Amino acid sequence: MDFGPFLFLATLEGLVQAAVLCLTALGLSLVFGVMRVVNVAHGEFFMLGAVLAWWVTGWFGGHPALGFVVALALAPVLVGGIAWAGERMVLKRVSYDPEATIVATIGMLYIIQQTTLLTFGPDARPVEPPFYFRVQFPWFGYSGYKLCVIVAAAVLLLAAWFVITRTRLGLVMRATQFDRETAQNFGIAVDRVYAMVFAIGAGLAAAGAVLVVPVQQAHYLMGGDPLLLSFIVVIIGGLGSIRGTLVAALLIGLCDGIISVFFSPTLAKMLSTLAVALVLVFRPQGLMGARQRG
Amino acid sequence: MGDGAKSLLLHGAILLSLFGLQFVLPEYHQLAVTRILLLAVFAMGYNLLFGYTGLLSLGHAMFFGAGMYGAGLSAYHLGWAVPSAMLLGVACGALLALLVGLVALRTTGVAFMIVTLMISQVGYLATVYFTTWTRGDEGLVMPEAARSFTLFGHTWLLTDPVTRYNLALILLAIAMAVLLWVARGRFGRALVAVRENEDRTRMLGYHTFVIKLKALLLSGAVSAAAGAAYALMFAYIGSSFTTIQYSIDPLLYTLLGGAGTVAGPVLGTFLMFYLVDYASELTNAYLLVTGIVLVVLVLFFPRGILGAIRERWLRWLP
Image (tube, rainbow over all chains, first blue to last red; front, side):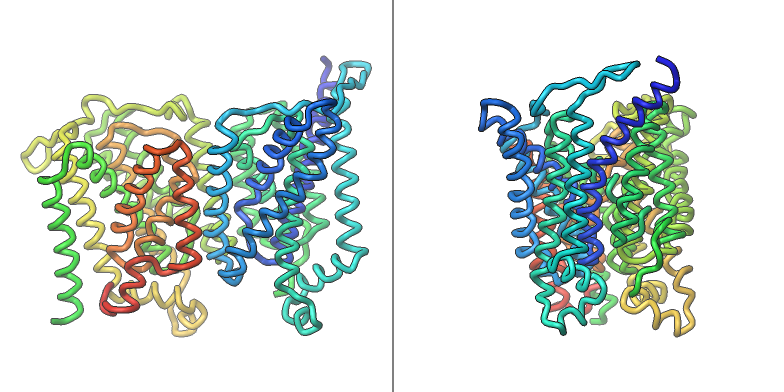
């Protein structure tokens, strides 16, 4: 294959990555922005989404598309419910103290991951895509499902954007993010907003996982990479800035996809992780974000 | 009896009972306790930064790893003798801590945790990437020449379990002495001042950045000593020792035993090691124990075992 088509293929792969990363990172970014806590268990919610997708599609049988649609609707809700329970039982009780929350979510990470290992087992399990369809480009054929992932992620992101900017729930969330105490003074149940945001964040990660699991397989350790990439995205995009998160997710998903086609993935990961750590040190507001108010 | 005398007596008694333990333990547990002693040194190094200075690092595996690879690689590739390899390991850890500190200590709170986590991840990836020298996940087994050494006119055999146990105990004793000296001295009080209120400490005329850098340097060196000793005694180095798991373990040990207490990490390491050891006989999902203990600690015992004891009964506990 010539360089041009090869780059095009790499870009497509990058776009699929970026689409899923947008959803996952948006979830992490919402939680950080509104609640001011870092959720280390975020990757495990992603993993739970994928595992639930495997479970639901297997349970349904029949045409794979049917089970898949049900999984796409059900998995985020279930994962959101689990996150909600975790928030009520743990995070609320440590009063969202930043350090205690990190330690607690590390604990939740292990609990979720190891419980999955106990029940789901150590093997990677495939989920059948809802349909097989090849888009024939002049140089190569490409999975139609992967293109569909990009579109579906875009639709979900639009929906999330609509909720955040155009609904009462979104207004309440933004008010809480902007100034927690004033929001409380205006009668917003900040406490309930936190639980809701934590659940929505987890649900977004789960939705991303359901979309990507037909091309990736479900495995109990699959939460690590999305977690690290989401961290990177949220840091580069500016902590708590949703627009920054989306731009950074697109950029990093694309870069990651393209770079790993051309270079050694380990070296790429090493350099990008180091670069991101330095961004956090020297430009904590992110590359694009403006300084946040205290 | 003064507080200083009490604490010396207590920690002397701990060391003495650990020395006595080797005569009653069966072989399997002797090996396990040797590992525990070294991991406890690691946790004590961690505690210096977390418990006393109030800086929560999620990347201490890189210092453990620096010691391990500094000692292991020099012994394996350069044929260095055990004592000099050990010293090199400690020096590597201290140097890494200095470099990381200069960058990471510009941040505080959550950002510091994430930065240390990421730098440590870079360290792990480096051990995988430079596979020509490190053999990555597969790791290296120390050569025969590095299994014994001559020091003070005595030949020490690292293949002998009793020698290993006592060398690990000596290292623990040194670490404990350093920690006691720090905890009771001016430097330790400056660290606690930074932990309690950094702004006020700075206002009182202390250069808090330098204090934190010194703490990280000492913490990194102690952690690296544990890593170097682990490599040389158990004759193996590998990437798995630099994963995030090895950053979370010392945090867990310290939290369980009591952050900001000298003996806490030792107690925490003992309990947690045997808990995980026991769980791993029952199931392959033994890390579930780690998760549950972390959540329970954060929710119900944020000060850990010795921290709670100090609060209620023994106010003098360092």
